[in-house]
Amino acid sequence: MAASHRHDLAQLNGTPRRRLYTGADLARARTIEDLRARAHRKMPRFVLEYLEAGAGEETTLERERDALAEWRFLPRTLTDESERDVHGTLLGTRAAMPLAVAPTGLNGIFRRHGDLALAEGAARAGVPFVQSTMSNDRMEDVARVPNLRHWWQLYVFGGEEVWQSLVDRADAAGCEALVLTTNAQLFGRREWYARTRATKTRPSLATLANAARHPQWTLRTFSHGMPAFVNVRDHVPKDRRGFFDSAFWIREHMPKALSWDMVAKIRDRWKRPFLLKGLLHPDDVRLALDAGVDGVILGSHGGRQAESSVSALDVIAPARAIVGDRIALYMSGGIRRGSDILKALALGADAVLAGRAPLYGLCAGGADGVHRALEILRDEMRNELGQIGAPSLAHLGREMLVRTDSLPLPSEAAQPAG
Ligand SMILES: Cc1cc2nc3c(=O)[nH]c(=O)nc-3n(C[C@H](O)[C@H](O)[C@H](O)COP(=O)(O)O)c2cc1C
Image 1 (cartoon, helix red, strand yellow):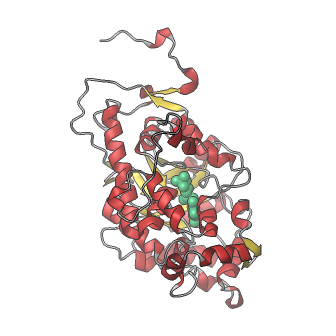
Image 2 (spheres, protein in one colour):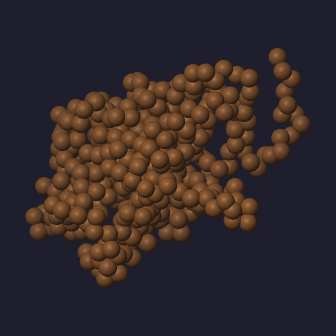
């Protein structure tokens, strides 16, 4: 991946050797990559395979970072850099930055009560948290986290009564928005992760041996047993409620012909903001607009579904041309730096969702680590905004970016001043 080459950059014949900080003092973590390195130090291999995996050849995963790397800012100078306001608006409400913590399932594998920690970190950082259907803390418990903007991500599985009861519970719990994920009805081929198991429901010996070398993680995560899919467990047959078994049962009972009819039914039942997540084709963005949703989240599920697709960043501009300012346009995929967020916004997104970045923080240090990850992204965004000469986020636009394949600039790019 483009990101992993970076540590060689400022080295001449290998000196000075670049080092990431992997210690416990979160304030000393300078970048998301520091938190990631600490996560890699602390977590057993099978957990990392789950966290990092992309589908198949991982070319979509690679594309997420490459797409960002293909754009460069064309900085202005002698502009007013004193404020650098990075507040954003999500669904009409002000946030500390235009970012939400993306829904991720199985957060209990990173540490016990991982969903509560993500929610707490997000609330403290002033951004929404999207809780996954496959989370391991009860929706109603997460809803009690002080100052949380709580969104619920819906997977459709089983009979009609399942999604209906989840939507009604999200309403009763006061969730601000409902996010229907549309691109994961058929599970992606995350082969590296699959290889950590000997059979469908049994970890391999190598996995168990490796996990045994991480006693702190084992204690912190499993002290009260295996994490469970507590929000949906009651909808799974009693004899299939074991950890692996319930995950596979749910997977097997996700309708493979989910359609726009289902979107219409959910739209009918859920009265607050309703977003669709996992779209990439502009025609689907148009259909979403026609379906009366309040926003779309472009994305490839962090490169975990289609093996060789475009990334969300690649399709922001055509998606924006379709939706205009009628509905919210968000993207997810590959956000590791404040400058990544600025690029997405400059290309036309209203906000981004970050998945792995806050998860690295969670693995590195629980709720404090999540908060630190979000703080790093915000600080980087504020600095970079000044570096490129934009007084605020409102000044970002396509004209501030050039593609690397169009460099050097042609002579006609120099417009006369004034
Ligand atoms: C470990 C992991 C679990 C995920 N689980 C879900 C999920 O349950 N529901 C969902 O809609 N997306 C899920 N996603 C996708 C994220 O919401 C998000 O789109 C993706 O992580 C964005 O890419 P990034 O990790 O590079 O930020 C998951 C992603 C990861 C990495």
